[in-house]
Length: 420
Image (cartoon, rainbow, N blue to C red; front, side, top):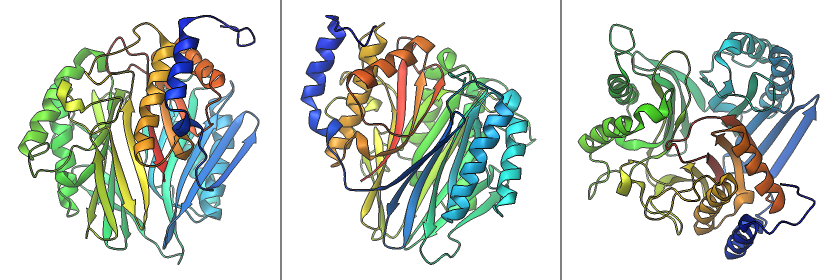
């Protein structure tokens, strides 16, 4: 589509109509936030910070936005990310990197060098996701979520257990949060279980045991990120395994725990069929609370069509909310995929569904501090960019990768974090 020439395509008419419906939540400006960005040689680092009574919450996104050597461009990004972490005394809770598995070792070496140079701990656990690049570099980017307590004391530490390995434990006023990254379907003998369904079963079992090792229960899980190598081949089986585990733990029952927010998307670390990152919250109910977003004006409960997750989860800590929005795609209130074959309209519908969740929470797309966009094809990604340009959507930090979405007829999906 030529952006300089008006087009009578149905997309433009539909886009205008939908945008008018939710104009306020797309374009309204939130309260002032600490925002900064840095660009150099085709690389960008964006920082979003929000203040609480005892700490500042940070989302740091480092991106490669050009073609070139993965090692050299990763070094540029990671040096600046390390500088941000050191200068603002950020203690990471979650650190996620995207790129081809083949260059992981080299990138992690550059990370270690950059971190040691600024006296940061390079052993902080990470999740590496093979996200297929869109911009000609085998390293895509990095996302870090962390906090900086005003007193300067250590509040996030690395903890370990035999079931999941290393994780990050955040101790705040009246609450604890535990993030366990890269949990896989490894059996007690140290080998991956045979077959995808068995790996998924062990994956959830290991997550449950890992949480218990640190005094948490799986019923306290508020967010999961599930990555499946051959997503379209056995996503239905994955849902069955997850539902069985959740049913045993009482999720979705009267008086039982709420389903966590979740993303289920194509991705892998090494040769496993699936892996999961888990975030759990233990709280006294006064200083921190969690509340699920079970439905929105544009989408109903996902459990109605066989997926055990909430549309989002709000974490209210010291008077402000961090909203973890689940992976969201072009699905209507009946659970049907919409705008089949039309990546522009699916992109728009995805954005509108996310905007609708944020509107109910008193926010807008401007409140997004971190996001990941998954596109089935390069053409779908280009359609997303056209939609963003045509509607002049607010810019927010996001990593973009090629990946299958949970249904063959869905072309884009986005997860997001917003602070209100």
